[in-house]
Image (cartoon, rainbow, N blue to C red; front, side, top):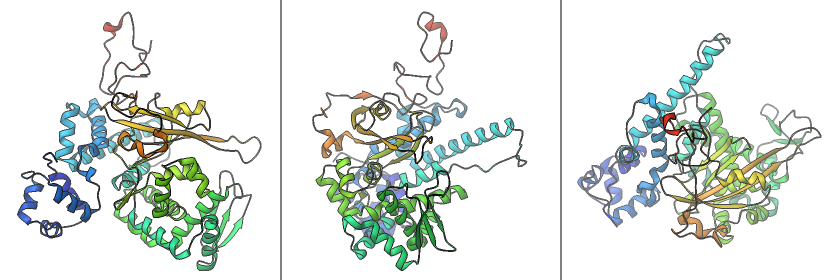
Length: 470
């Protein structure tokens, strides 16, 4: 093992868990002075201490790898590329800052995000001349806040996952009657009346009335979707206090973020109930992560399986660390979760060379791609469209592309790697996180220059770049 200095990371872990140096040293079976030297990068980390840290904190060894900093470095680079921030630093300098001061780097990214959000709100307020009478608005970033909450936990919430698995064991689920068991528990334990209604309103598929304890469900939902809705309501009724505790730990800045986080945690519980961790992990490994086979085996949707696969990060029983995305034809990313350091751009747009967008030309077909990011890291991406049909004549349906990706070092564990050349001789398709932050200046698909880059027209008199407005 090469010399590895992890002082800031270890100090971060200890602080997050509220442990003193003396308490952690005792847990690791080392002296307090030795721990102090490790935290101040005087002594490198040894294999023995690394294994003990992994046991105490339940983190993978990759937590101390610089590879785990990929997303934070990319976000910090977006900050540096914003000319108004006045930061002159190259990627190497930013990487060194993240490695030495991850907390400071996160704070800088958060401040920049708030600044950008405030600027946009002020522009909107000026445009409508404060027509709402308020003259100002709260600085809210609910989706980003909630996504960061899950990202910081590697998209795995142990308390909820363990509670859901324990509940399924107590109810003695059988694979073919999960929905029936959940529905019976709602009715018998919580006195909830389930009523099918066809007149819930436009785009309303279920509604719960706490006063009358009536759960209205639309027959438009498939059997698997109904089961998921039942499990979500069960989460609120049976584990509401645990969900509130987890939300409180997130320190969210707005009521919108709190509401969205509660929904996200309830949905997480629902997936963990329908697809209990231990069994689902073992079956997924046995099927080599064949998504369509898992979907048929559990009688749930393709999207539900992909979402659950992105959460298999229990320290004692890890699955492949996947990132999960859902996009529409216009490039809007409505869902994104990651158990890895992969960075999804927040500066507008993603890469047109990414196979997730190509799937719209081949509906229902699974497509694979080995993709290389500008930092040289390669990923295997599996993408396919899913369709939500209209419920009546004249109503438009919905089509999304679902993407599931993992680092190339994990690709061999999946059925989708069969027949692909995974070694270094195959660099893969060069993609980026979006034109605004991508360093590939010679990309034929570039729509506009990166943030902070000016184009000298005098140098392009005979051949003007395709992203120049003429």
